[in-house]
Image (cartoon, rainbow, N blue to C red):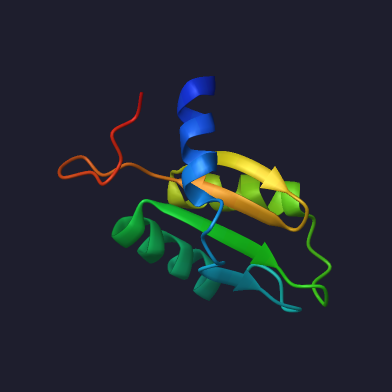
Length: 96
């Protein structure tokens, strides 16, 4: 579980990130979940965007992705969410 300070730090870090995973009109598929899991393993902090043509709700989608990939939801804003899963060794982020 992330503290408020940790979330604030991660939000400020992810501000300039572009979306790594985009959810289209097909919604959340196994391929999307696999993409999120792989991106989190490589980058730890990612931004996910739901495109305009998708009927998915961002809050439900973020919750589902976090449950399936075992990550934390840092922020949900508009049609974007920021997800974080810290590596056990050699993490890029030194959380406060």
